[in-house]
Image 1 (cartoon, rainbow, N blue to C red):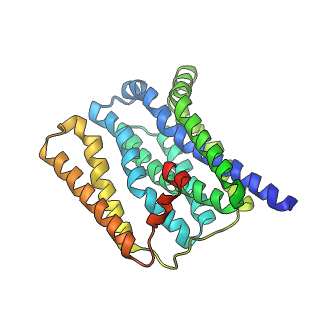
Image 2 (cartoon, rainbow, N blue to C red):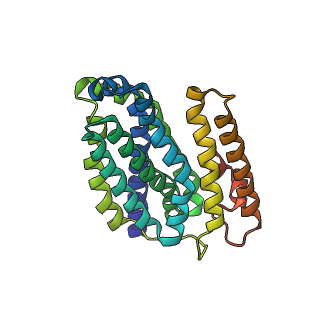
Length: 266
């Protein structure tokens, strides 16, 4: 009983800290953009992709990260995601040009897309049903805290140290989380025995179209042919994804989950 409670507390601490790190890092970057532009002699378009590269890979691969964790092991993929995010953070801090920084940010987004959904599934699997609502509420509150203080932390770090430190701060935290996760998290899998490849393809392509349209709309204009085509095509593919998930025997995202208010709000 005591051992189970200790493992549950470790699970909550590790998943919450990982969620806080990933969420905070995405927001602190925005306050550093003027300094990054000056130091790396970046164009406005290059600077724009410092944010967009992360947003695009994160949003497109979010469902994929969860599905891979369900299939190959949530603890394993969570640890890999933390490692990828940490390595990309170091690469971003060392970036000699805006192109290198944007590439590192894209890899950060991949790591974040693996880590974020798995913090939820790992925590849900570790907490007893009667306490799950409380745990998920606290998990969501920690994510909300990161959103709220992100710009403040980013401004403080940039003014007190340098913009590189908004990325360097992730490195010791990531290096700490990886062995803690491997040692203290229980391995778990989803119910599906195989990957829902059609679902993965439809979801990834649909989300890519929607997110591409959203991040490029301010530059090209909401009525431009590229944006309209991206948004319409993405929305159509997402609709096809929902229809597929309702029909397939091994869905990557069972639609019945959305009947649960906590899951839907999260």
